[in-house]
Image (cartoon, rainbow, N blue to C red; front, side, top):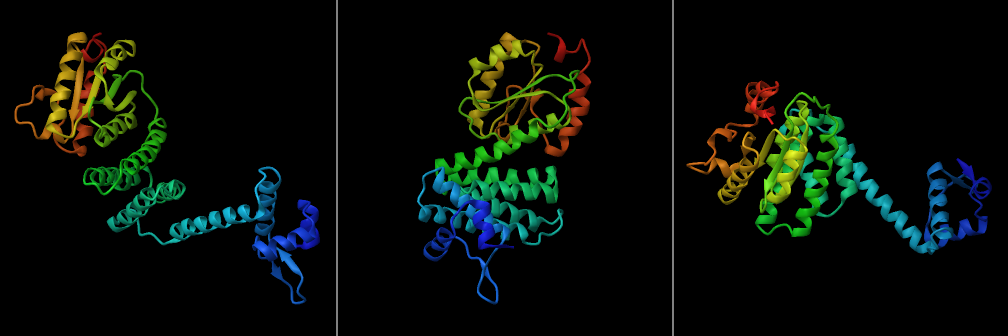
Length: 313
């Protein structure tokens, strides 16, 4: 607690100015002793320090600075209230759905700081795997559906997808790489803008030590060909969401095989599940995400030694 004299000495703000800021603009609300003297908390002092900085350095009016300060505090209070709510244990589906809805609504309203605070809190509470697969992935699917059905604008879809993708990339580079494993390129063909499945599979590979060059959605074929040779790619992962994109992916595969006959592929997504007679059935990933580890052990790891097709080039 500080007296008004101590505050003026610390901040270099005259006492008359402090009183004017309090009385006219309600900049801070100091406590009062029984005899009526002002007593300032540490938070009051920091708020006044910030206001002085805005007025002196940024040439902002005190009224504008106070409005910004109050708006920031109100938003922070909302976030703190949400984060303070008791959450059930990580295995509770209701907890994940609650967290999902809170983050979704924050992103839908372009409240990025609040959404990131919730995401950070979720990682602390539930860990990486549960938070990513049980909360963030459903949000990506949800916003994609909202955009396709006209419930979300292009700007909202782009904003929400980009923020969650950034969080994905942060974790993507945390895992160690084992150089002896086949090098992977992950992409969606040109025209395919949905990359949730590709993102998940790429993250699975990275967690298992594979080096993955992630190109993401809407990748032109001509840009891929020089990368395959320069980066010594051994496996190309492609994800598509419908039959039209599956056919486009088949064209990409055909083109790649003309330039790299020994290339291997991992194909997935709803698009391949809907094709009755796929062109390259030997590379389609069937089953669910739970089967990926079996594929990794039996197919991918089995081709990690010299002399195999993955490393033939």
